[in-house]
Length: 178
Image (cartoon, rainbow, N blue to C red; front, side):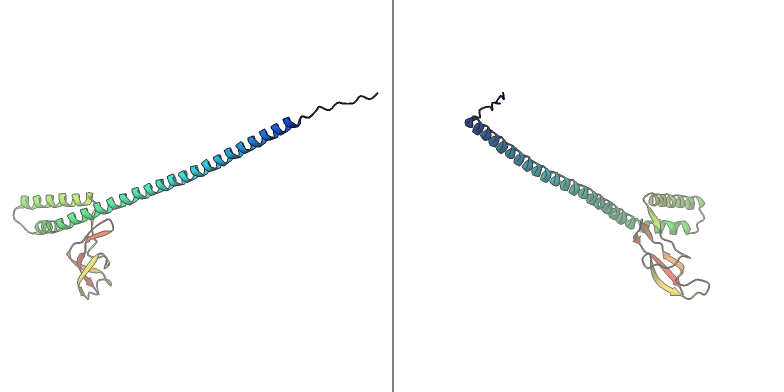
């Protein structure tokens, strides 16, 4: 004999309750997913703002560093430029003939000390006699014809020029050949 398998009785109310529970859970899950998406967007926006602020701060640091360097160089250039006539006079005094050798030696020592201070501050003398004329470094006060010198070669320096790094503080006053 065949036995009939009994199917469990399905209670309609229980099914409806379970369906309602699934819908509620699904709705709650969708709400949580929406909340996660919203929080993720907020996080990305804040992360983007933070990256922009960090980049702005780095740019600010670089800009202020360049401004400080420029200001330092400008102030140093102004100070050195105001001291160059003193240097010229010391060089003239050192080149003047005198009977007092101790006096001459003292002037030469002061001149050497002055030049050492300039060198320590990256102040360099612009090349003079024998170099090629460069309008960015030299100021031609006259020109002469001299077959023994090359074209645009500096024959004589009236006043020495100086520069700090690549910035010219004072142009050399020169006589240019040919």
